[in-house]
Length: 324
Image (cartoon, rainbow, N blue to C red; front, side):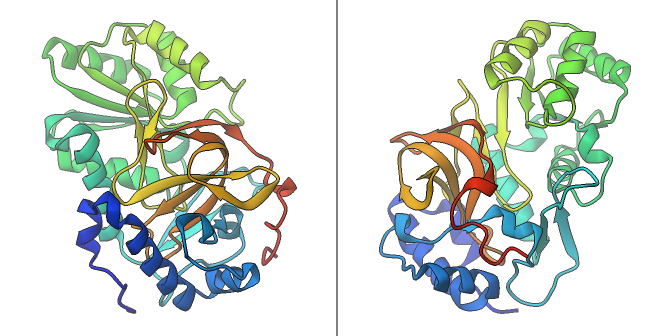
């Protein structure tokens, strides 16, 4: 295995002032050892004089290319999609690196997983193989070691009974769910959750009328009796997550940062403002740490960001190169 240019353990406590220095090292290393990213860098004739001058790989490349450094690994994460869709494929060299990333992130935002009973309402993810989200939640469930921690496919009766039992015991609960399933459950089993963190992770697309985050927040908070519905921002192509604890404002761990690009010019990057979200995930070291997403959002001066919607990637100039 080709050795990365930094010690992985240093990422989890990366000082803010070192972020660009480490990003530049990883950029240069990935540009030298990742064949697909190297071609993209050469096509863009880019350098790394600043974060905004680093070239970001369009996320759609994960549907057509193998974005890896080193030999093809055995672990594959795939995105969701219909039978007509091409799904993203993320080959992961080191699952331990992924585990360290999401566990350090969880500890940063929520504390030790063992403090919670962790429940996963993720039917659309459980129904398919190779889900990075299921991998993460399964590991958190095992780490929590609570006897009631576990997944729920479509047994709302059991989930309702479990939540009621845990509420009586005043047991802190971390309930993560795909949006459409949380909405269905909340409307079918309205209740007041006082000791449960409710966390939505998207997933309305293609299942029913899509709700804005504000509409989703209203439905869930009104029916589950908790004012603050939290959110997770992650994707198959990354190894890190951002969390929105309050008001839909996502915050990143030390090894992750979000920039924005003009919707009409994906190469015009800036650190704040509205546009297409571009994610730096330094934990994604054996793949690509610089990903141009297809999400529209706004990034603020403190590094937090909001997700506004989606952009039609086919209309963005410059993103068709290398896609076959």
